Image 1 (cartoon, rainbow, N blue to C red):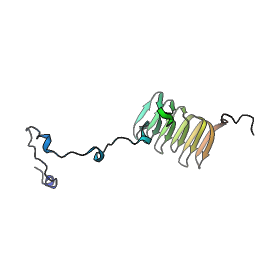
Image 2: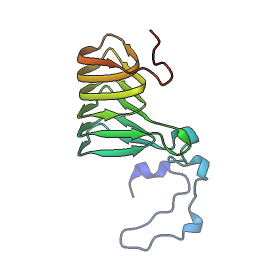
Image 3: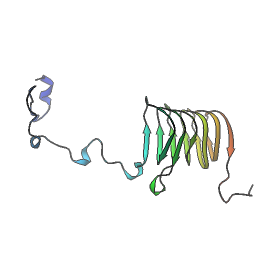
Image 4: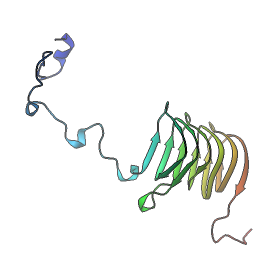
Length: 162
């Protein structure tokens, strides 16, 4: 037994080659104390592509998507059940090469292709590098490296107004 193991209170020792101890003797965590608790309602329908992961292909997603890794393909994100979601966030470490269609798009990383948020909002942050085409109703640019064709799409019911 390792001397560092003595720091664990009431830990049953299990010698190699022996059966595991009776589980009724082991302490357990309540669901509220577990590291992976049930997702709060506002987080349901959130998909994440973590840093260091690469996705190649087209995806249809219900809810919202956060990209911290690399995507090579088209993403179509629609609002999930109950109307929640429809958001895409490309994190500072994220990269998307392809078309992104969603109600709201926020870019902190790299995006190359069509960003289509017709009827919604596109936010480009100071760490963003965006090239291609952007369709939007509302656009916010905070110092991004931007080389794109911009197309404002008027909201429904706004036809004829200047």
